[in-house]
Length: 407
Ligand code: GLV
Ligand code: MN
Ligand code: MN
View (cartoon, rainbow, N blue to C red):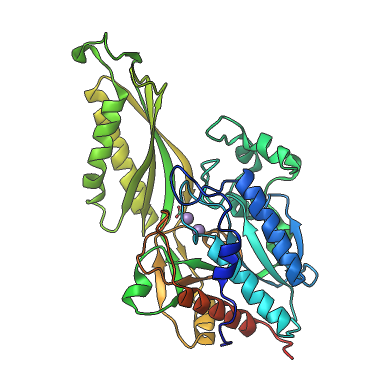
């Protein structure tokens, strides 16, 4: 493995002021907003400085090519967008580490015998349009262009409108066999979003699997009314029903060992302090090792929602907004990469990734970098400089192991 030189923390420092969220803390970087545009410009500039040629594909993903784009490419990278008030590492660590690792190969005089690319996938978090891994799912044909075009953001703007404003040709959104067909191997480096590497006392590991996961909208419908003039006994208040559901979810999830169920957002309509809501949307994120378990968990939560609604004279409606089945990474690929690293731990990931989407179509692997607290999707997300450097070393070693033509 090569010596640690520049670490990816230098790259993170370059983008540290882009998309800071003064209200929530951390970063809010969402598809085609000002921060995302600035990050994309930074990526193009940084990749160009290394000598890579950057192109944007028809789904808004960026590809920085070392050599002419072509088949059997060795591709690495991740995403630059964040959850609302997210950390600095989830996504960007994989992009800056990929640029560092490729830069070392370029500067080290390697003559690659296959194309190499650094990719930035669009809207991995689904924080603007509510659909996780939007860019990679479009490329892989796991999201139809019709459905994508109609997705809306919090202000009601459609993806079609926003993407057209960013210069994408809407007629060409969707499955991209050319982009997919070029990938010989995709390796995504990511900060770990759990505590597996702490327990294994290792700075770097490989992914073995990803939990199946999805997002559901539970809408409670009641009667909007006046907060002062309506007696407590006369109300059909969907917020009370929604609260009872949220409070009951941990108890439901406990019946499905290893499952996770989260409500991270509740939205009341119309949302006035002195107004009994007419409806309340409860956004549910549910995950489990086995997809049947996730489905059963969501069905049980749906039943509880109906009961909570009926108790308040309300109704409840359950709609699936996105779904990604569980992933087992190709053990042949992971074993080869682990060998190139002298043996590293294999981890199950509770978090979703673009690599999980691509794994259904092309050989794929993931490297994780230790997170000393396990905290992620929060401003406190962190990785030590030495571990980030170990991550770049590992990615460089993995890329070298897949390339011929060294000088
Ligand atoms: C993305 O990080 C997810 O797991 O939702
Ligand atoms: Mn994330
Ligand atoms: Mn991520």
